[in-house]
Length: 152
View (cartoon, rainbow, N blue to C red):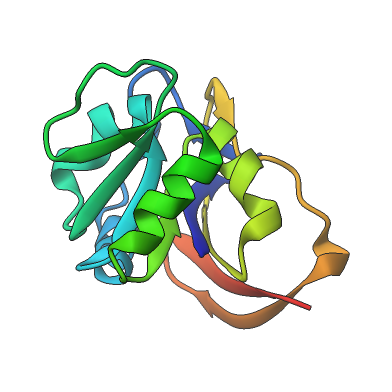
């Protein structure tokens, strides 16, 4: 499993019902990674971004069994991982914060974009132990910095 996220320099990943920035070139970067893959995300993230994500399969981690169109709903992480693996496609953990917190320990890679600038938000990417990871790729784009981290 890979983690994929965009965050501000202060680790903000969301504000109310979306992202506090508009960086289309970074979103296109995200789209290229998840196209045709299986994405794992929480219900709020799915409701905000799911319809704009060209994934082949959606696994939504939610305490509520209420259906979500086009997604498999799972109430806990082990169930969600089993459902995601069953599709036989690469798996990307796409947020929100609680899903990231649960999946970082299981991930082999993190594809993290840091959006340049200062943004206010109410949701943050969790802290992780940088000593467990190393940067395998780094690209400094005009409006964001992309790093691919691999587990040591």
